Length: 106
Image 1 (tube, rainbow, N blue to C red):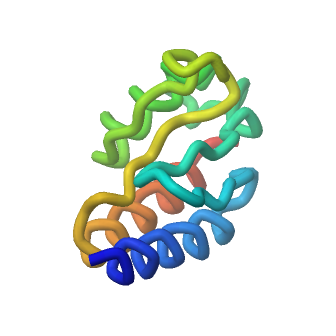
Image 2 (cartoon, rainbow, N blue to C red):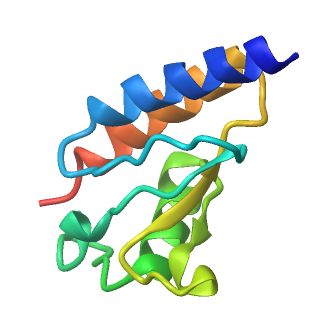
């Protein structure tokens, strides 16, 4: 099972690196990424404007159907928490949704 989680971690890490503006960490012992998403603060799709981590997570949930946790809950407003404890297929789909949804922000 450990090898499967390492594979999922690597898949998500590589896909996160493909999303412009995302600064991804490489987790060593948890099932979570804690990427810096502050690049998107102040950006808008013409309807919604991302002001902080809460807005970012709500935007991703409503527009991209991807669930994240704001980093402010863990003391870091510039980050969000993203679990990779899901199937490879679900993780690949979630990363594709994130990339597509974030591309709408200018």
